[in-house]
Image 1 (cartoon, rainbow, N blue to C red):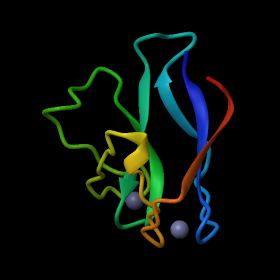
Image 2: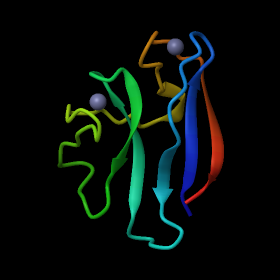
Image 3: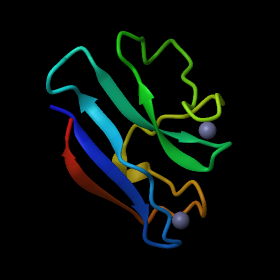
Length: 94
Ligand SMILES: [Zn+2]
Ligand SMILES: [Zn+2]
């Protein structure tokens, strides 16, 4: 089951949109992850469905720049102010 997650920064007040994270409820093949887009200075949702996370490059759905995944939640960094004081909140399932 996937969750909608909102990534927020306690230092500057940045908030992402609702980002799908995990594997789909209805379609377990569907897979999404949050990624950091340096051009948008934002966390964005990236569709990993049927793709090879380790060997492919992934791009921002908004601007097409190459995005970076953060492997460990503790290492999430605010795309606006680079603070590590990040909170994750869950906002339903998809
Ligand atoms: Zn921040
Ligand atoms: Zn972007």
